Amino acid sequence: MQMLIRAISLFLFVFLAATSSLQAAETEIAVDTAERHVRMQTQGMPGKVQITMGKLDVSRLPPCTAHEAFSPPGTRLSGKTHVGVRCLGPNTWSVLVPVQISVTGNYVTTSRPLGAGQVITAADLSVLSGDLSALPTGIVIDPQNAIGKTLRNSLGAGQPVRGDQLLAPLVVRQGQTVTVISKGPGFAVSAEGKAMNNAAEGQLAQIRMSSGQTLSGVARADGSVEISF
Image (cartoon, rainbow, N blue to C red):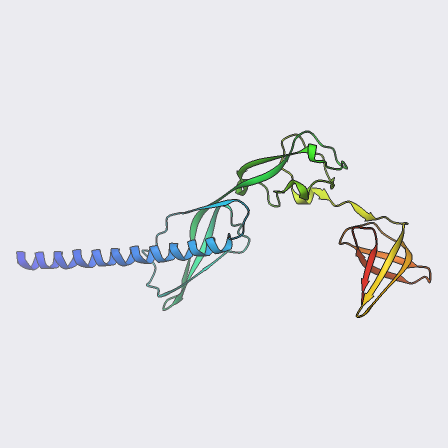
């Protein structure tokens, strides 16, 4: 009887050990799948990316031989977030793997208080280094992308600068006489017209020609408007 009990105990021990080993392997595969996804998605980010994977428990999930990682809708791959891993077979399930993504790099702040409508100069800006994932989305990381642009709203000293707070300088102003360049295969024709709206470089400008015809083209840095056919 005692030998039977010992045999059953040994069997249970081996079974539980094997089950625990399989669960550990399953967890490791799921976490590795999520980490590879994060590394691929964060390639090319400015600064140094540091990824810390959180803990995951898949002990109650059925076995899986094919895994696929995905970013849940609305997920921002920075700071404390989650990455999804789904099983493609032979069973079907999905889990969320916690992950901490830190991105250390340079970002632009104001060096002094700036008012709405102010054109930004180099003296108005400072460059700091820190965790970009803790800053608002769209933060400016190169001061050259802010210099010469106009602030939409006032900012205090030391505040990070976002791209959506900046207006590009106007190269075409409403009522201004502009050169309209029409381009097509093998030809280029220029004429003058009157701008019907304001436009920054790269924006669409509407021009009324002397004939009364209204044309739309792309505003260029030199103040001309290019129309392609």
